[in-house]
Image (tube, rainbow, N blue to C red; front, side, top):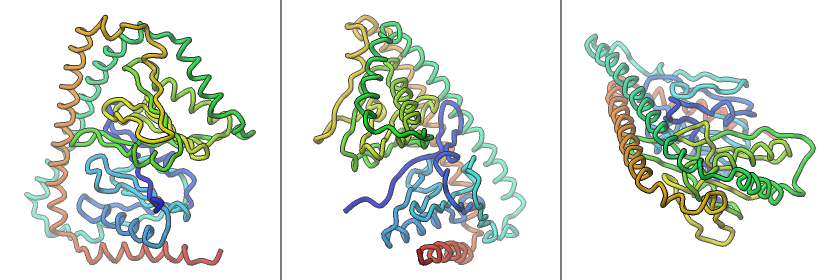
Length: 363
């Protein structure tokens, strides 16, 4: 049975700070329901309930997961209806369209919070912000170490060969597919840095496609640059493209999906390393194609030391995200106790009723 759901992230905990792609991910919608309210007031539960309902009646749903807790949802899109729902507390930069605001704070009886509890929540909010700041700062340090790592390979890089690879792929993929009107790619994350480490939906996103190109290589071997050239050429030639940014450094790209070509090409190195497993899978090794032979061996000692420092900083940053999750859970617990979930359920039913009404409108 065809999977009627697609799974992404549009919010990331990155070396550039909190990064949001909702402006692009939710572009083209007719209406967006924005759910507001503190942690623990049932926003993700409403999103999950409506998603399950849509899937049960055969509608396609795009699910946008939380990088703090990937099993929870930050937002969904009912694809055929062009309707989105989003947790306004954690999402920034939604596009202009009809906005319907739903305040789940109406279900919270704040009078039940004692003054010392309010003070505790305020302190915890400060601790939460500090934990995120420490995570972002540490990720940035890790990125600078990663730049050191890249420098050894960039010195050995043959950029002309890399461009030949890019132009060859552009010709192979796009010849005969070109259109006269350029397009704008859709920007997303396929994964995220989470409190438990890197998490991704690569396999789920690419499994339905006929062709998957696994890019192998080393840091600095031109993987992201190749993807940027392919993305730019696709947009110029009017070829629909989904552009997936790196969840560690959103200035880099990690994957492109061409729905009309049933093709994906992605960086298949750690922390999202996969290998061909079926017909239609192939490897594109940028190290072999563009690097001077023996580069790994020439700098083995230096690279090993850098990898050790990089790994330590990534683990440290992840520990700060784990602290953020624990603090967020403490805040959530206060609001769970004073939220009337019958009110939350009623608000969810109102949204669901409006969506069903749109589904049942005569075409």
